Length: 304
Image (cartoon, rainbow, N blue to C red; front, side, top):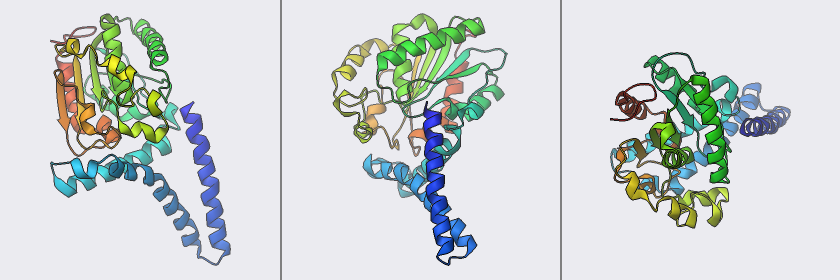
């Protein structure tokens, strides 16, 4: 669903900016300008939302480590990654999504976040395969997470199909953003199916940025909703759960305030100078994931 929508948007943008190029050419601009100016306008248009999100989310005033240089680097990396994901990996996800291979090690299932799909995980899956974890799957869920219970049921069915195909009983779940909230909840509901859960940049306590997408007071990650309060009501049980790893960034431009991505009491790692999307694919995140996987006893095992 998301891929088709993004392809339609790309086609519409191509028509608009091509028309701009034709108009410039007819108005006397040289050919190079008639091509370069619409392309530059397209890139600036695409970069506008991630760039503005750093200002709206307060990242500019809250990053302590690295100062202005770290803030600028985080913004540039996030903009470039956004251009790649929404210009290629998401709309053409069938070309970029992980392709599981036979081999040793646990089954890994990667879960995308809001307005994303499995295409975002291709690079991470390649790195995991090179590190000795080739059985990597990605699932596609409702990209808007309009109904978390429906998303959980959909995920339950898809995880069951993956485990049946792999001949295994448990999996390592890695979720980014809303996917991180989902894997945390799923592990609570079905611990027998989850060897380890890793949440990356997950809005455990909501995000004010949910109002940007019209989530309103009913959105699953709108702060102070009854749903979110119920999710966190029995957090004390998770606080002694060594099978839950939480990774967050103080430069997160989507989870705001950034402290809402914390989950005190569990194994937690704070990173700096990585935006929301970049956090999922950052080298530091990858190494933290490898360290967590190394503590597993083997396929279908449990965390030490």
